[in-house]
Length: 275
Ligand SMILES: [Zn+2]
Image (cartoon, protein in one colour):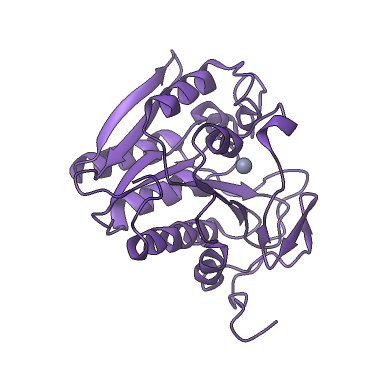
């Protein structure tokens, strides 16, 4: 490892509580999303309910746009046992100084029922992040339709956690003409959270916490959200995975730091390939 490679943060240690699944801290998703909504409205974000049922609504937020050269999409909370994502969205809305060149689209929680149950799946036992091609579930059908109504995003950041991971890692789906920003993300996250050391993660070869999955949408039928975006919109995509055996605050810091690395990159390289 060279001196420029990220070093694990001292002090952030695994808790050793996860066994057979996530066993860590839970959140009250209703109050987190209520707080996020108030913060967003205060900061002049617009909001839209794109799915409603007798149990929950799904909401998307949007800010910027007048001067925007670049469109960034952020989503979280599709797995109900991964609380760091929605909390990171709250922090991002509250604390980020967004560049004027950026238009931001945000879906802070796609599976509220899963959070109530502390399950990866929705209330019917379906992993929503495998439903973007078949569109069996009403909520993902509605989300896919909302995504299709949006202008194409240049960049997406999808926030997840992995209960088995020993450190933070990410998937990067590259797009033509864009340079990789994986190292910038890892460098930022390494200041707040250890990076996953394994050379193989989830069956993929990994280098210092970075996976470049060689997967074409036509090769898979159980599309995750990232593959839907890649197939429909073609922008660059990053799926950030925080290690959920660490303290919740560390995982939130990791997801915020990773997303802010993308925002800083876009601040410095604001011109879309599409213009
Ligand atoms: Zn996940």
